[in-house]
Image (cartoon, rainbow, N blue to C red; front, side):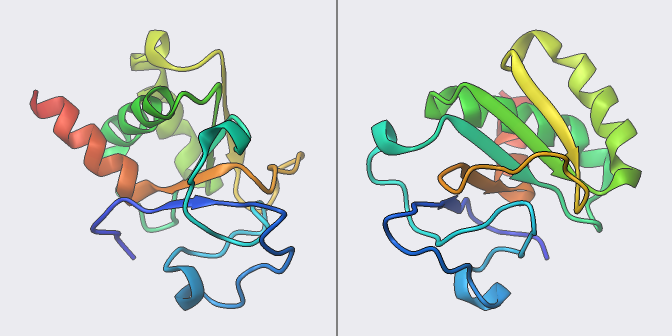
Length: 144
């Protein structure tokens, strides 16, 4: 389901430990790798320094260069130190090629995670961005 506007999803333990029950609760797809309550970032000093980007199964591989560029720019704009991209296994090779093209723009702690099989947990207070939101930024950057 493509997103038409940027939505930040920050997980704060002090709000609630309960995950959203449905996609409609947050407007974002549910992923087992990201847990916790959702809210808008109000104070970046309290947020963990990880940006997590969720790539959906139906994402178009032609968009991956703009998606990775937008994700890297989003992390930089938000002042975050780490960038994790969670994607279905079939998308990882093409995402890696797109990332290699802009390797010098990626944070040092950039990594991919295969959806539903991540070996590590993503913190509850990570900043979560949808693929659609970073794709929009990446496209605007490519135009300029």
